[in-house]
Image (cartoon, rainbow, N blue to C red):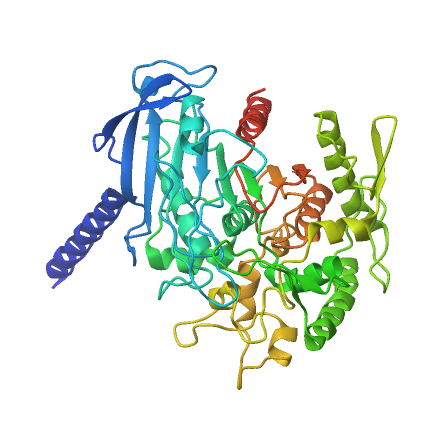
Amino acid sequence: MLKRVKLLLVAYLLTLTITCAQKIMKLDFDPSSYQTKTLTLNEKTFKVRAYEKIIYMEKPVDTAYQVMNIYIPEEYFNGKSIGTYTAENAPIFFPNQIGGYMPAKPASTEMQVMGMRPPSNGQEQQIRLGHQRPPESTGPRRNTVLEALSRGYVVASAGARGRTNGDGKAPAGIVDLKAAIRYLKFNDKKIPGDAGKIISNGTSAGGAMSALLGATGNHPDYEMYLKALGAANAKDNIFAVSSYCPITNLDHADIAYEWQFYGIHSYKRRDPFANDQSPQNLSAEQIAISKDLKEAFPTYLNSLQLKDRQGKILTLDGNGDGNFKELVKSYVVASAQIALNSGKDLSAHQWITIKGGRVIDLDWNNYIVYMERQKTPPAFDALDESTGENQLFGTATSDKLHFTKYGQLHSSIAGSTIADQKIIKMMNPMYYITDPKTQPAAHWRIRHGSKDKDTGLAISVMLSTLLENKGYDVNLELPWDVPHSGDYDLNELFEWMDSIVQRKAK
């Protein structure tokens, strides 16, 4: 009997060992499975090894999206360097292609096209948004992946599920990106580049995902979902975040939007396919909703206990005025100064005060008129559950749900319910930056165009200020007259990335 028990135990251990080995093999990076690509950028030709459509988890549920492309400069396989970067120390650039919280394929060496958040009527439209150059710029669009590779970066880009997938509701997209990070760290010794220097990048909803990835490193809230996918046994914190116009802090985005645009009773949707491009007017009901939401914002802002760089608490009074508003305005003034220094003529904007070549003030109300309202209130948690964000927070049984108390209370949908509070939390980086159980990224670069009205300016300013208050390295700017877009300043982006990597190396 004892002998039989011993044999059964040996058999069990052998089976367990084989199972573990099979699991490791599924998540093992295969350095021999690649294609060599010859790429050209700015008349410079270079070669990379392309490892495409890698399944980065053990139990994928949608292999159309849960795949990753990894591109590595050929030099790193021949003991060579690109500038100061080698196979051992090259940073890993981690761009995502997520737009509108839709499912996204990984970025590639081909021209990148990103999906735009659809208009509120629910029509699904795809336009070149996330990687376009600003309208006032000229010249060909630039491929961010090629730029990174030409500068010596290893590039890894993961696809992710989105709100129109049956299983892509929140928090699926961020869980997929975390699983991809774990794959890279699990295979750090096999993949050239330093998995301790992963820098994420994204625009719009992709910018939000980039910020969320940076804010939630290794937090246990996501562990159950990662285990269900068979993610690698590794950490998922990253080194740095690049986030363009993040559509984030969704449960407070409505009140931030109306704090900014209250009093602007006309709106002009961003719909390049619409025949009628003329402004429309808010209804009396929408104006009343705007007032409700605007009045709720100071309470939220004051609850954050944010501080300026002199250590003074940032607040707003009941009218929405205060030093937080002055802080937001100061970023716009700084943006105008940069534009002026570059030679841009700002004289047509009578609401900007310039003396001696210095932008010393601007009229906030007239600036917002110039900016123009784009969305009707509530901008994100629509009372008829018609937005992409409503769909993001849906479930397998309810395609769309509210995610704010105001939205649910005033819903026009009979029997409407609100999404699970933990899921709402898991999509908002603000909740995690102060959580001792998370390991946020050390470096942050956030860009929100001064004419970007897809979400309120306060969203990026609150995120940046909270990060600064907690001691993280933050670089926030509101580039002058730039609309909702990303990757328009690649030289500056890569200069910033090089600088933070060099700081770590010292």
